[in-house]
Length: 426
Image 1 (cartoon, one colour):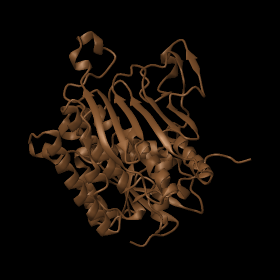
Image 2 (cartoon, rainbow, N blue to C red; image 1 turned 135 degrees about the vertical axis):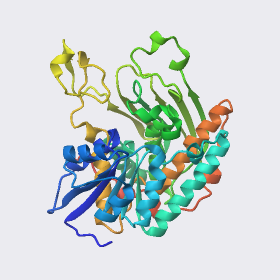
Image 3 (cartoon, rainbow, N blue to C red; image 1 turned 90 degrees about the vertical axis):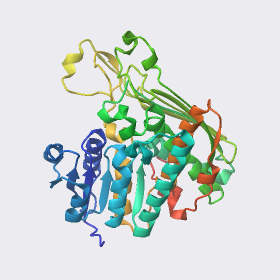
Image 4 (cartoon, one colour; image 1 turned 90 degrees about the horizontal axis):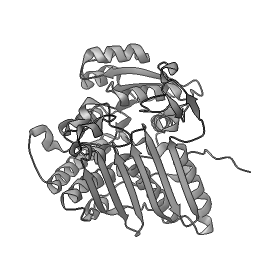
């Protein structure tokens, strides 16, 4: 597909939370050199929802199916932001249409047996899921498409700043990341499909711990590229997945969405091939709204990222209703009392930087996503091995056959020089 340098057509599948922030993030990208970004199409499981979404976000046309949308609009960027169970079908359709850039929301896919009403243990789910992802990535590569695995934590400014620091310290014989710790939590997803394994693939481990897992994998890839020209990969996983609120009296769940089918607390420990460690948590037990943090301890310093909330802005309101419909922080249940507003929240959470990477990858033939197929592959191997580990009393599960056993082109690894600059210099 030939690409005009002044106009890109973008399509979105899904009209829920992910579809909404995708559309809003594209609207926040500065249009330079007369570049025009057209939201050319949107599709949903319900055409009425797609039409309402199109009106709200200025999308050119609403479609009943993803396939029809691709045929009519011939997009340069196709954003797959629908329920997890449809991810792989849509990626395959995009690859078949030779869409230049496919943006795939996290996590990559769910176990295919769910759609067939089968039951299996964690090891079987992992093997079958990885086989499906392998086939899908092969189709993407054969089509010449670029897959951007849309883990927004990879794109937050704090992670970009840390990459800049790694580039600076590497010539000084520093840059070894020793321990990474991260958290993604709130009081329960509002998405109806979240509590249905057949649609979401799992709970807190699968859909929340995946967020801080992204930058943990990405930064080790960056470290390896800087030091040896080869990314550092994960090799062993231990995890815990529990349903805490479901086992408590009803009064304990008053201020939460209590999950009836999926886990609401998760811990993942990842051991990398160089002997370093990442500890990631995800849960639905945070009563005060979203809490996203990430910490890196390296041989040159300690970097703490308070993504949301942070205390850069502080507000006190004696009555929450005075705020009207304003949302000061994602998932914040009330504006009453003291809060820490997050202006430009879509940028703070990395969504704008993420979609800008997609735009640049569409415009530049030799540019590939910072978060690409390798990160998607390692993420799914860890998440599925995590559930296998949880079944086996948190025993460590070896994933090296996946992480080190599949060949990727070098373009699947991030380029530290293309991560972007967010820090000033003297």
